[in-house]
Length: 129
Image (cartoon, rainbow, N blue to C red; front, side, top):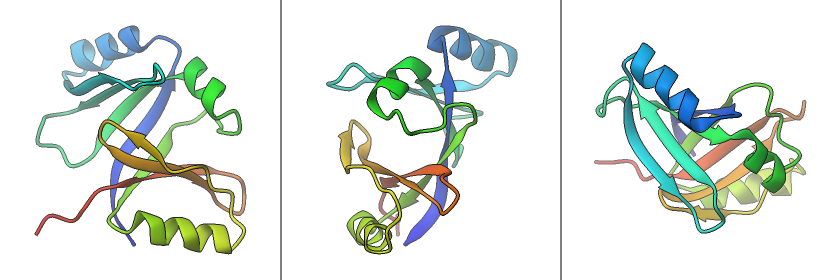
């Protein structure tokens, strides 16, 4: 069901400073800089536009407000799946914590936790053929 590690989500206090660090110091490029309807800013950066895996710089305070159960002290992994509902149902049926499926500008996403309470995310992305 999961076919790729797509993004690493890094929770930062100041997204603009984080962008400056990654882009000026490490020469990453901005892939996307968008705001959602609820005011969440999504800043996606990568070593190049062609990179298969990227980093999303999230506003730590906004994420804590929306998802207080998420551990914001460490980066979080976002996996890509072309069967998001099936994966959601499988996790929920086996009593793993799952968040609501939410629509973002780049696709539908939900959070889930493993048996130790580590949180991850899954975004709906279809395998290109």
